[in-house]
Length: 210
Length: 208
Image 1 (tube, rainbow over the protein chains, first blue to last red):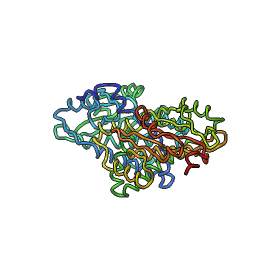
Image 2 (image 1 turned 180 degrees about the vertical axis):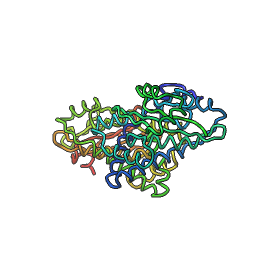
Image 3 (image 1 turned 60 degrees about the horizontal axis):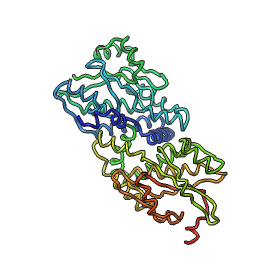
Image 4 (image 1 turned 60 degrees about the vertical axis):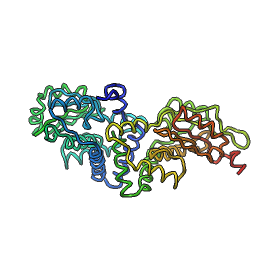
């Protein structure tokens, strides 16, 4: 493991947002939505996140433990932009949303987050999977799923699915009732565990291989 | 994450829409940001410089900016019409490091975009990100008034991630600052620019 990755401060610098670009990108996305609506914005977000994941190197691990070690230390592409901890061998949490700083800068310098960011999430939830709160979640979760396709453990591709997300203002999005018991079982946590985990984490997700 | 995602698009975009397309894309991103940040008005240069120091102006989103108050720009009558400002660390330095540790390397389009910008717009870019910065500052200055006068921003010098520098000699001559002095500023700062009253009659322009 590189010295840089081990150093917490340096690791923080690798995760921290670029506020100028994040705010500029949010406004640019709003311009896209003005012209192409929520579906056009959604398509852009999905292709942005997929393109990012595809530009990153493929990974192979001999054991699940090797993968978990890389995941938590930030060496895996799936945790390159966030601080991840594991609650169980199949349940990972994101401590802080990687878009928090950009959002804070937006609210400070532009004002209230535009409604289109939640409108596009409603579009995504109805067309894809009902698990996102706003446009940032679309990028984040699409990236995570696309990155998982590039990670192999004992030759099997990694699978991941979001169980729940919490935004900075406290808004929660939990997987639908019909999916939740299956996801919780795979993650090896209970619904009580989930509510406890959500108090101080931004995202809860399940990881597994077929 | 969003910054790395946007950068990962530029190679693809440059291949499909040409590097000119990427320049337009970054310019629109910078322009859109500046336009949405709203108008600002200050009583005079001291209040603007204090706002800058406290991170209250739109310029502050780029990071820590220092007003070099010893480098006042004067007009033909000797009145102060602006100052030189310096950005301590380019906001894209961490992005470049993040790209190094996540994707691997900056896309080839980075150099191509900067070269095209230097050839077709102005010879001041050290990397593709300079397009956003420079456009952003130009637009932001239009939204700020000091003593009821609109501002103008002129790019003077930049130092890239690898140490490459770009110095706009013509602009330096226009505002009457020695290029060698600005070169020495690049030891401590990543980007140097002038903010001044729009339409001010400068000594350098009179000589031309």
